[in-house]
Length: 213
Image (tube, rainbow, N blue to C red; front, side, top):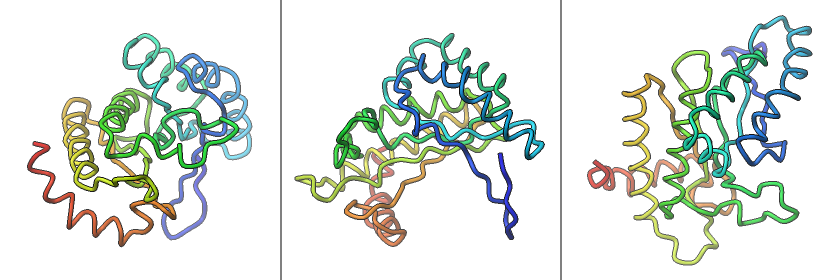
């Protein structure tokens, strides 16, 4: 982890979504090969003992880790051996992020789809079992949906986000890891700005929270 000079510490992570590692075994291979070389070079320059990895946990890898605890333990061991920890994971791209053409498919499944909820909670469970500095971790995710999709269902999006909050709260009680959702505002999406998110929070999410309990 690199800390830059600023009024508040700025922590930079190396984001693994630059690598086409779409399976659990490919992520383990990345942690065995490239990451030790990267962290060794950073340690030689900055003198820190552990560096932060911003993981991409596509659905296929998250499902493999959830189904096989030994795979997840092996990945955690490789992170530790590579002098790395995982404060955050990118669960925006569900999969296929390194295809020749991605475009609007990167927003599918959106938050109206129960599969987005299932995938997010599976990734959160994986992240909470990986080495971290402290008890706070985050998941970056799709900003609701893509506006050009037909039949944009704000109620369904709000319901699934509320269910995710409940699931993450249960995870925190079980693991003492607080994993939070970080929606990435983007042009053309339901949340293009902080104002869009606040409007959604007031008008949609607050009403959905009771159904999620």
